[in-house]
Length: 111
Length: 112
Image 1: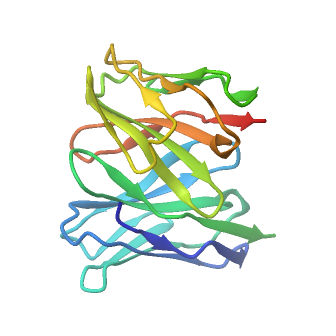
Image 2: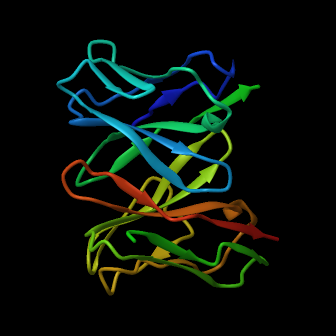
């Protein structure tokens, strides 16, 4: 399958902003997703962005999409300890409803 | 409540002993998948199913089987487990439209 790349680890102080980056491969993707995995749990959809958008804001979350560079980022404002988790970007790839996930970025929030 | 359930949540077994991990969803989704999660590798798709009796290989299908006799159930079968199948397994079902994936809680498997 196609490779969706993320850095593996990010550490920030509580109250700072976090920026998690992702590089995807399929320029024809209709949507791009961010999933969150809390310790001991499955993944949950955090947010998504349509490919015809450059930015989407949802409370503390801002998603930026640079289609030219195939770069997706997730910014979390005022990061809290409850934001500590693994964050996966994902894109539809290949055929019917197949989704390819990145390697995941583990966010550690230091109190 | 919309959910995906998996059983068992934890399983320790020995090499070669057949096992089945069940998965069930109550959202009437047509598309379901199995993934394994390993450190540094993210989620890799094992098998997926587009509807009843329609299944296909994902990226890492070797050593696994699936079946889809009913829309709500999608069991994962390991006929002869080996230690390299020690992993965290997730079942997911996908909504139409935005293709949101709903994940089960995971099954942690240890093959000795």
